[in-house]
Structures are given as structure tokens and as C-alpha cells.
Length: 206
Ligand code: 99T
Image (cartoon, rainbow, N blue to C red; front, side):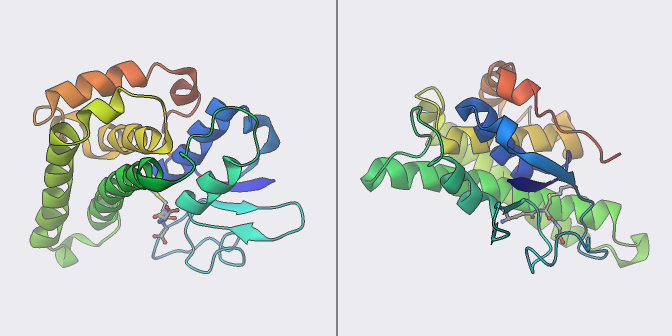
């Protein structure tokens, strides 16, 4: 299987952390891509019309996207404990926590594109503030509602939260979120020592 990949993407990182945790990493051939809403990567669009990564190209050429779908698929390919509970509210909760984390990533990626890509004279501070407010309320929910879940058995929601917080450190600076959520920051710092997280540390695209 080929994974359309970037070392800067928290969505790709979710897939890679799952792959490392489940022993599937060796089965993925990573295809480096450089994505942006204003300069789409010609290697991605034929497989994912949105131009987003990650996309997973199966051996018969069929492509799967987005990260939520890829993670659920890969989780069926190993013999260990699944990282998505099989059914009912446990499964719904795991997917809900992943959705919360993906929302943090979406908002942070939009801030990144607004500040790094958009010409300075076209920037819209209220847009950046609005995305920042989504991150603040999501961090509040993580602390108020999900904190004990993060200390429970590893699942895809927990992995997604770690990838979201790692992206905030990577692109928005640690000061942007750690003072608001010190206990979450301590949880993240411990989680980030897992070999799957160390193997997938976010890096600028070469
Ligand atoms: O917006 C674009 O055209 C390209 N952006 C992406 O491909 C980003 C990469 S993060 N991926 C997504 O937004 C995927 C979202 C989708 N719902 C999923 O797969 O879960 C790049 C971050 C950075 O460079 O800082």
C-alpha cells in the first residue's frame, strides 16, 4: 500500500501513529507530497479529488481517503487489539473524540494557511481569531469532558488528540495553547514519548 504523505500533516500523523501502534508501518510505502490549497499536488488529485492528504492507495489502485476512513480500514488489517471499539457508544465516543481533535487540526491548519500563504494585505484578523476560538473551546472540552478518557486504553480518539496537540506545538507555538491547558500539556508530554509518536514527529517539508 502507498500512503500519500507529508511530515508536516497531523492528519497523516494519525495514520502513521496507528500504523506503528499496530505493527503495520512496514506495509506502507510513503510517497512524499507537498500540498496547499493554492498549489495542488498533481500526485494527489488523481487519487483524492479534494487534493488532501493522507490518501491510501491500495495494491489494486483503489484509493481511500480521508484520515478517519484510512485509520478505520488499517485497523481491520492487524490481529492485535483494535483501536476502534467494535460497536455502540464506546465506538461512537472514540469517533467523537477523534472528531474533536480533527476540528482542532482543521482550525490550526486554516490559521497556518492564512498566516503563511495568504498575502499580508489580504489577511483577515477576525478569521484567525475565529479559528483560534474553536481551538480554545475544544481544549476546554478536552479538559472538562474527555480528560479521563485520555488516561484509558489507547484508541483512535486518544491518538488523534495527541496529533492535534503536537500540531499546535509545531505550527502555532507552544505558548498558543499550553498556558490554557497545563494538565493536558503534561498528558501530551508523557504521551509524546511513545515510540509511535517519536517515530512520527512533525517536521517541515524538506
Ligand atoms: O488544503 C489543501 O489543499 C491541502 N491540505 C491538506 O491536504 C491537509 C494537510 S495538513 N490535509 C487535510 O486537511 C486532511 C483533512 C481530512 N479531513 C482528513 O484526511 O482527515 C498540512 C498541514 C501543514 O502543512 O501545516
